[in-house]
Amino acid sequence: MALPAWLQPRYRKSAYLFIYYLIQFCGHSWIFTNMTVRFFSFGKDSMVDTFYAIGLVMQLCQSISLLELLHIYVGIESSLLFPRFLQLTERIIILFVVITSQEEVQEKYVVCVLFIFWNLLDMVRYTYSMLSVIGMSYTVLTWLSQTLWMPIYPLCVLAEAFAIYQSLPYFESFGTYSTKLPFDLSIYFPYVLKIYLMMLFIGMYFTYSHLYSERREVLRVFPLKKKKM
Image (tube, rainbow, N blue to C red; front, side, top):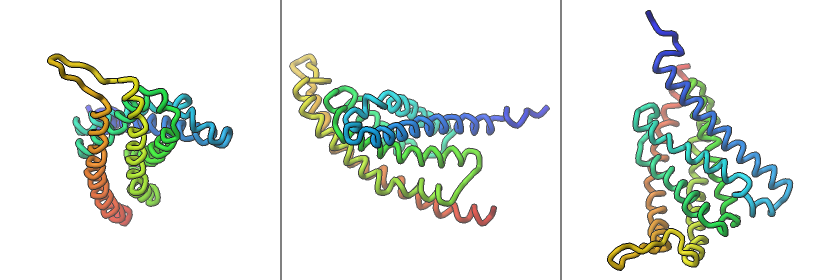
């Protein structure tokens, strides 16, 4: 006896991915809407307490996004693991290590700018992914999802680098994450951040190259699909 369509593994995978993308889209849409309304209501003052207003939801969305590594590993999402790992760990480190651990950094304008860039990219990406799972595709949305990152992703990396730069004096003053080890060894965390700052731009090169190759492939295949339809 054949299983109902909705119980077949292929449909269960699609249903799970659709729900995942929908949750992420709702979370990032809420963040972006909240930031927009606050800016028009309070002006520049809203930028100072951006993290206090939407930081928890942002942390939740970025934490859930780690599931995407599992999706790729088990094969329910077709993408390369290493570029996605670079993208996700980049955000996790900036959000949880650099911003969350230093209250003084949370009040910087760069946090607001960074959250805007992240949410613009994610709202488009998750909308495109969500509709793709159920077999829906739109030319404008496909082009936007494969093109918007080209100017915004480098700006994201620059904003992340600037956030690290602004956090260094506070890590030096408070000694956060710096620790002494046996045998007169120690970890001075500002040095770790400076090394990561260089790695950030190296990682950007690999991520940008991967996204560009992916864009060429998608936009090359997409018109053929539209003609067949």
